[in-house]
Amino acid sequence: MEHRVEVMPENSTKHANGRLNIIRGILLLLFGIVIGVLAVTAIYEMYLVDPHKLPTCDAKNKALKEGRSSESQSLEILNGTLESCRAEKDVLEEAKNASEIFKAKLTTCEANNKVLQEEKSSESKSLEILNGTLESCRAAKDGFTKDAQGEVVKYRWKNAEDNCVYWGGHLVSIHSKEEFEFVNDLIQFDVKSLNEDATESNACYGSDFYAWNGLHFVNGRRKWSDGTPDDYIGQDRSKNTLYYMMCNDISNVPSANELYVSEEPDDVNARFVCKKDANE
Image (cartoon, one colour):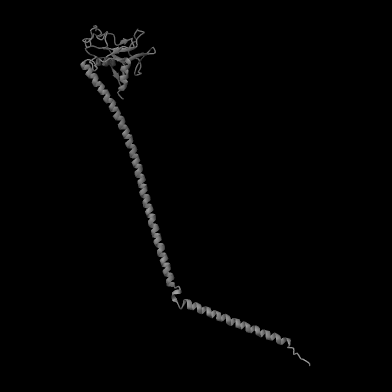
């Protein structure tokens, strides 16, 4: 049996395929449109149907205003904090200045206190000297200084010098006739009435009633205990002289002797004269 196969022309096949492609494109386009419509509808339902979900300009404006208000408040707080810091700085500066002023005043007070203490010490020494002078005046009035047993107190030259140094001076030094006469007047007393060995020209002869002065020998050299020059008293001929002393009685006849000498290191006398710089 004979089969017949009818062959389609080549051009007819190409036309059929073109139509299919066009149909497919149209379908895809329609599908895309449907999907877009569905998406828009969903968005619309999400935002327009529920207006609370759609931000508005008023809400944004309100949010911006609230943000600005918050920033303004923060700025005011910062400005207030800055002013407070500046005020505290001013207070600290004033406190610092007050502290420096206080320190300066404290230093001044301490310096004044030191001066007052020195003046007090000086006044105390002056009082001691005045008391010593008072005792000397009482001794001159009564005769001589006496101990608790009523015996006349006597001093070696070194003890007398130590007493003068304690009172702020030294045994007296003499550098002129006027100074000699002044000291001689200080020691004038009725010694002859107490001394059985007194002579016409020396009421202190053979007694311990002389008055020590500062002239003495050190290593064979004569000097005053206060360090002043040996420029007035004449040299004596004795090679054994150690110390010099004075005597002036109200009954004394003027003599050429201005000073008397002591040749024994343990010699003692009941009187001595101190000298202190007037500026001390």
